[in-house]
Amino acid sequence: MKFLVDNWVLILIALSSGGMLFWPMLRGAGQGSLSVQGAVQLINREKGVLVDVRDPQEYAAGHPVGARNLPLDQFEAKLPGAVKNKGVPLLLICAGGNRASRAVAIAKKLGYEKAQAVAGGLKAWKEANLPIENT
Figure 1 (cartoon, rainbow, N blue to C red):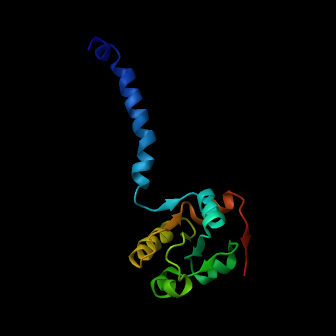
Figure 2: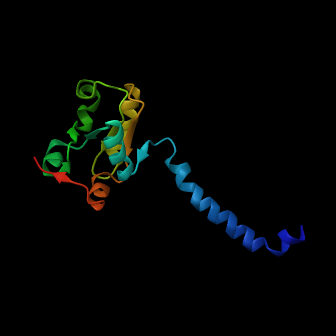
Figure 3: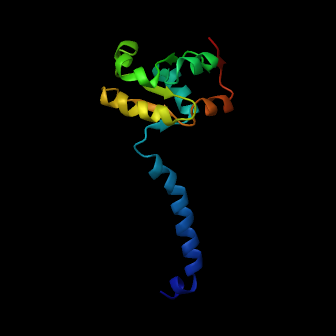
């Protein structure tokens, strides 16, 4: 007990630093987002399907190589026809991650349990120097 009283500042620092390390895991839990590197691994290893949920004009200006375009406003109607296998990883990307997160909820409602948003969106994709193509 004397140790706790004498070293309360060190204990407080240790607990707060542990909390700061643990917080991102709690905040990210359930959002279904994954890093750009994780997305590339799923594409290469498990034949993940990359879907860009931005508008066609944004998509035409530049998108990840091999990404399909299903705009968010048409996503629910067109997803079952575009990606028939609900067992493959479905990787959703947009400009920054917000629309992709909304698309994850729609995809999971449609039965795509392996749907995940690419964290950071196209911005993170470009920062990782991954290939972009224009149409």
